[in-house]
Image 1 (tube, rainbow, N blue to C red):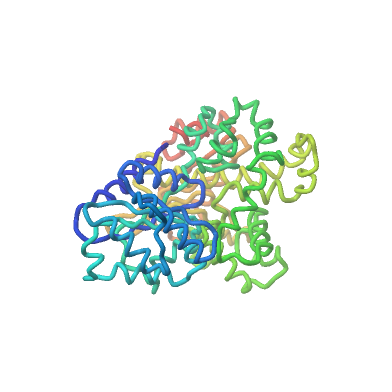
Image 2 (image 1 turned 120 degrees about the vertical axis):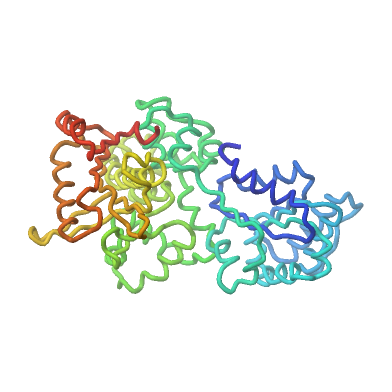
Length: 482
């Protein structure tokens, strides 16, 4: 395992809980994050029972779990069940003597074939029910369908209030991903992360441990591991939508994702890209958000303005780079020419937005609070009106604090540039925006720090100005990994 200490500790504490009464746990996360590895390892270490469901009819699933349970118990033949009430009670019986983890992996497959299954589990774990009170089974339901798993314990769902553990297994953040891929050069690490994100399986199973040997090998690595039709990564982004049961019209959802990848970040822009009305976008956007494929980001200065971004980098790369030339990629023997044609889209639609997101993440979660003058409470992009110039200014990074009076002063505003050396002109732009915010009466604006983020570097005049003025922060690619 790599960097799953928190998850492993939570699972082992749950499995070893010696208090009487069966307990339910829910484990979720996008596919290929290592959930199955963790749960199999837990059962192997404790003598627990592990069952992986398939996409199958209800009757076949009952036969399969009966066979697996019979084998686990050393019975001479498979156990026969006619319904899931019997199955769950049999699983509760496993914990009669001591705490034991019981895992049902890919639970959404079973619930799709039998929608009453969550209610069956609810009734089996009802308070004061004899079978539950006499058991110390630690029942873990696991799944990758984020929309389904996210609703399992919410609202009026049958299992709401029944779980003693709710564990989300996340992707690795950009720093851990660089460590996992074994990439030391920060610019190369950011480029790789902008394509494959932090999904562990993409290195091990998909790329077969093929990592860029250095900055000069990056282009060749993209061609042989992502753009090659023989690589599993080639079609992976197309398959991710299929994991979500609520997504029926995949063409519509691919178009919504393509619109976002093309730079249309708000609902109106997405609707215009698809040739539809803005109101028509509510349902597909909600489904994609529930599925964890996109996320909503409120504007730091406009309460009524929200933008969307794709959370899975491989999906962004697919829609920005691969989908426009898909037929050519499938039939070419040498993708080098196609990759060169796509470099502009890669830089503008993939690397630029990804770098901005990384800079916000660093500012919010990693940067030393002394750099900002306080702990950041929230960090978002923002739009500032400039009435005199009859325009508006986009701000890539806006960091707010939280004082003792529950006010949120602006700690810093910043601009992020992937392929551009930043100079005094960028600093003056930030100073102008800060003056606009101060004129609006924004709390903390007058003393807000000015942050320049660049993967390329900074001009000498900007370095000299930053050395004289502590309110100026220069953050390079290497700083993001310290």
